[in-house]
Length: 297
Image (cartoon, rainbow, N blue to C red; front, side):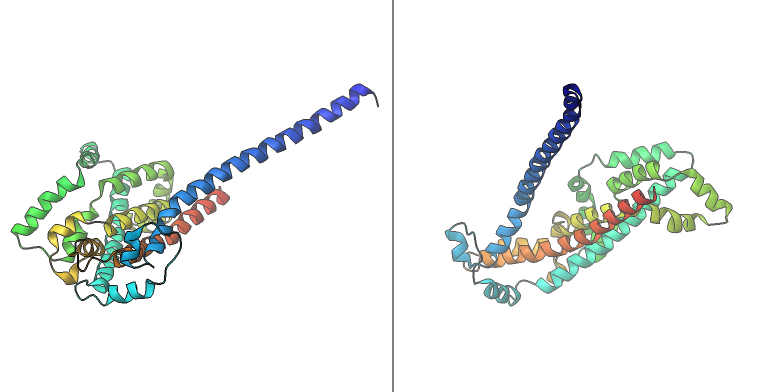
């Protein structure tokens, strides 16, 4: 073998080796950044857990890196507080958030399906009107609802917190865009030829296709309703109907002699858990549907 042939054979091996080194360096950088971002995102939750295991005087002394021994006492003090309807608050928040998120996602998807499939007079105006509502801040829109409910004695009612939030322009807009990108008209026409009703097409064909979008919007709607403080604070006065944000505000605004940071951090931890559970459940559904679609494709 000549010297020139040996050089030609060594060059590809050297090039392949350089590519592997570059790929390794790239992966190390990417994973390092991801680990750092994960630590930054999870650090507040870690501090939350640490603080709920310390007493209020210890928390006021300064920052703590490790868990304390006051968790059981904070738990006992929080659930024995007669002024804080904690169990009712957890039930109220879960019920309102679940029902609201389910109805919001369903009716938004149904509205998006109707405006995407059908051609009717005034369709452009309807779509523009719905999107125009997105420009109005939710607090401004809620003021009219609050005044109406107060004038008509409609306060202290679950329905006041559920029904108005079903009409969600943002959820509708997302569903509309998703349907336009994934739902071919040929599928709808084929189902009509087979004699499937319009609602049957929506329930049997459209909903299974848009499961990832439904899961994403369910998470957003659930978190939004779970964290909603503005509207309930003005419409809910009955302690048995108060939601978790109202209870947190009530506990935080307690008098100096009863103010307890350990209870507040424990209550915040309890308030975060249902949101995390819902996210984990539906994020798995998103990944499952996306990966199954990729395999089928």
